[in-house]
Amino acid sequence: MSTVVALGGNALVRPGERGTAAEQLANLRRAVAALNVLLADSGNLAITHGNGSQVGLQVILYAWATVACSLLLIPVAGMGLVYTVSALVFGGWFIYESHRLYSRAVRGTEPRPMRVFHASITYLTLLFVAIAIDPLLPF
Image (tube, rainbow, N blue to C red; front, side, top):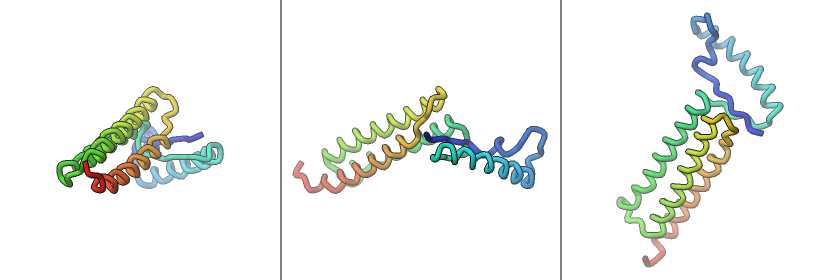
């Protein structure tokens, strides 16, 4: 099981505190002790700054920006049909997985962030393969 923990900002300042560095450090020590228990229980712990929907939104923005940049290679580098189709299909899949993560985080179901991580790695790998193959083909 994967556990995602948002730690930062308001998580480090308790009600009634001023938010000094000493107070935040003491609160961080308490949080780390609790995280050790979670890590022992789940074995897979991701720590983020912000809540699940904030992180999911950042992932969506990253996915759209990555796909947009990959599509810029078509006019700039004169990429052909294989690259164009690959960038559109694999990019659409990566964006879909990113939106799926956000949707699951907002609904409160298990977001499965590793699925998006694997999708991003696979997307980039397939895109690089398309970059390598595209100039070798006659069309």
